Amino acid sequence: MNTVQPGGEVRIVLVGTQHPGNIGSAARAIKTMGLERLVLVAPERYPHADASAMAAGADDVLADAAIVGSLAEAVADCALVIGCTARSRRIQLEELSPRAGAARLLDAVGPGAPVALVFGRERTGLDNDELQLCHAAVHIPANPGYSSLNLAAAVQVLAYELRVALLERAALPTGGGDGHREPLASHAQLEGFFAQLGDTLDDIDFHKGRAPESALRKLRRIFLRCGLDEREVRLLRGVLADAQRMARLAGASGGERR
Ligand code: SAH
Image 1 (cartoon, helix red, strand yellow):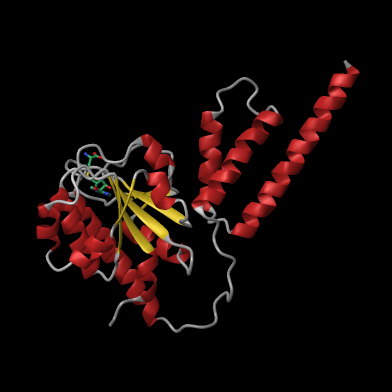
Image 2: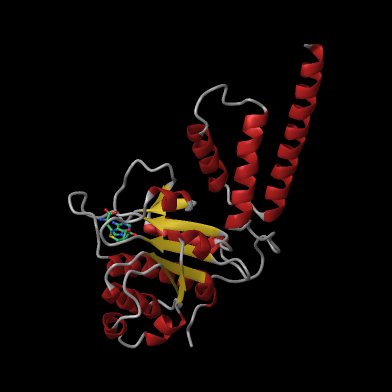
């Protein structure tokens, strides 16, 4: 009835959940906030009676939940992926408040452009490889001495922020604005760009013997901050292709001179 439309494209992803009750509680948390898409990445014990019991009336969300083997699979088609972390650690990702994270997700979501909000395991959270797949991180500014919320409670906080942001947007007059927007680049398109960027840096001998990881991480961070659309990624890849071509030519003529 008052389902606020874009909610359907916001995917709540739970990675490696250990307690099935938390899956049920998370389903309930998101349904109360008008969201519906739950994706479970390799849950430890699921399906499970505890999940159904904690879901209460949200069994439909559980029944529709997708189960996949990896986070990469869960977010491959997403325009934006935000990871939730209990610790405000020195991660190489832009860190957002729950409110700013919700706004960023709603800016990116669109028809055929789902977005994902990712939650980690109860014991260990998200590992570094999983955080690498995220474009930004959200940290709930909890008690610094005791900052780790129960998984489903963290889902509830973020789902609430999404709800408030959706309601605010629904109340705004429509029309005007920037009209048709090019769809944001998908996760897979961005990863393709980053792979080519890595190759290009090698081709132009950017690293000069230094380990490439640190520069690549910083560059990823810059580009992920911009919310690149598909056309922009094509343009950047065109620039890289030309740089790679020039590097090949320079290599060939350098070889001749020697
Ligand atoms: N011991 C783990 C905590 C995991 S809590 C750790 O230190 O990482 C399970 C999940 O709930 C986390 O991976 C995160 O996605 C979410 N979560 C818990 N507290 C949070 C907080 N303060 N801010 C953002 N997400 C939080």
